[in-house]
Length: 335
Figure 1 (cartoon, rainbow, N blue to C red):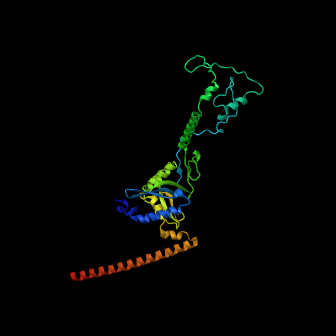
Figure 2: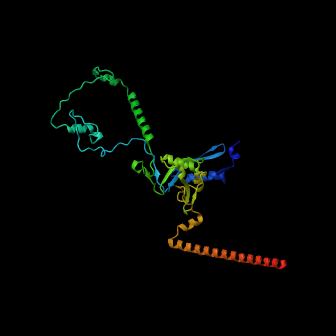
Figure 3: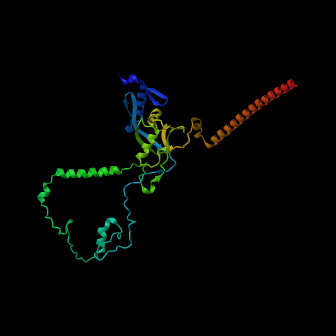
């Protein structure tokens, strides 16, 4: 039997369900909005009646605490300035001793410059021995041109392809994503991303908030603890709602629509304050208007406090009078 008839509704939140017809309509609208940028379009799969969304989630940076990038495992090449030496000292045999040159990459040039111009030093040919014995090393006979021509072009191409593949593999292993243009640098490995700058991560709708945060930090090789951060849904009205750890961010993005001008998802510090819709409606007003609203709220607060105090004072007085009357009646009857 078709699973569509078995599962007529789809659970998108803990307490929210939508029909499949509504889901397909929202998905068409979402992907139509992202027609110019197909990378942001969503796809879905039906796993035994359970709908799983898959796509790219845009996340804006809003953290205040510095983030720490993982230290690169590769040994950095020392800068030529660190290796500079005032003089190049050569020994009697005309060789430069290790550590007495100013550039690791130009040792040959330094040795040539150290030799006096116009004089040809007679080179003494030292005997060369084989590695395993003290026998003088025999000179190899030069390879004939025919031997070089016997090597096929296919083998040369194969060797070149293998070298290129190995180089590409090493490069991919060393690759690090940049955070809005900030590449890894040992001196700037601790920094705070620009607020509002956008990054993205590919996820599916089964990943929870904490899993998405951990995946984002892993993508950029960030050492901070994922539990130090949280995801917030920020509306254009400045309303800010914190997503629960068990929420599904991709479903939230889907339900709020694809427009980043209306709703954005921010990565913020875990203790960031939420802003309700009642407070958010005042944020965009001018400072003078906000002060007037605050004064009005203070006046209303004082009125409510005065009315509450007066009501309790009246009730307290009435209760005291009733107690006094009963005590007087008991005193008379006892006499």
